[in-house]
Amino acid sequence: MPQTRNYLAIDLGAESGRTIVGSIDGDKLKLTETHRFANGPVQLNDGLHWDVLRLWSDIKDGISKSKGIESIGLDTWAIDFALLDKNNSLLSNPFHYRDARTDGMMDEAFKRLPRAEVFSNTGI
Image (cartoon, rainbow, N blue to C red; front, side, top):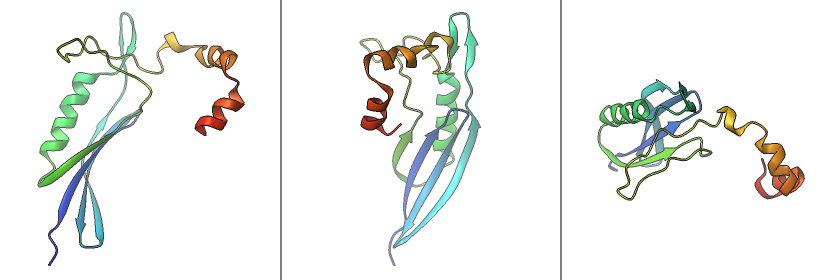
């Protein structure tokens, strides 16, 4: 009888996050959601940010609720970034992509590279 293997997927969407265990037993895949949580921006004095401390707490909760895991994969919105210092410590909460500081940036980008060319190269 084949041994069941468990893999954890962490999905951070723009408004919610979740952890899902994918269990593979032979040629069968079973998906089990182990934790779901809200993921919304927080307004600080300098703008709209991701609440990375709360997200990290929810990710750890999801990991703790997921048993027998062999590996972990993380999928995010992939359009924002966090700055780290030389010790790999977070310098500040990353800005949220919906922060007003990005208003008008698409028009600026298309002045440098036409919209059709961006779509042709990226599909989006």
